[in-house]
Image (cartoon, rainbow, N blue to C red; front, side, top):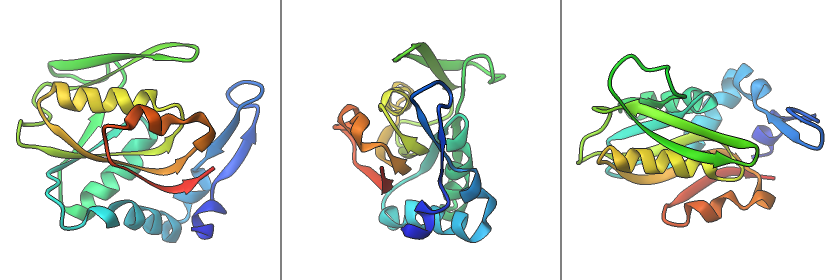
Length: 171
């Protein structure tokens, strides 16, 4: 995992003073490291009854679509409001500095779907929890959540206590 850790760069004071942003750009720029991260994300779920992969905007699209491709499964994007052209279901959630929402097409999942949720980073857990709620609101079951990195000190995992959580790197 040191190979992955060395490809995540710290950007101090972004997006505001006091925040250290975990930049995955060097990781996705290196095909071998990107491939390794995708394989490590999906490995615990091989042989499981997963029927779809979902990822939230925007970096979850990178890892989620690659995991879905490797597993031969559909990928469902969870988008910011106003980005999807068909009828949508949405879930609003609070952020430390305001509120946000996620949307998905109303036919994105079936009641029989078992979904693996993927994102690059688990921080406070608000976006991941809202994503799980949206998936369930659309009738599917969240099989597990997987992240490239987790900021342990923010305790986002606590918001996901009802779900299996797999993380590659802990900061």
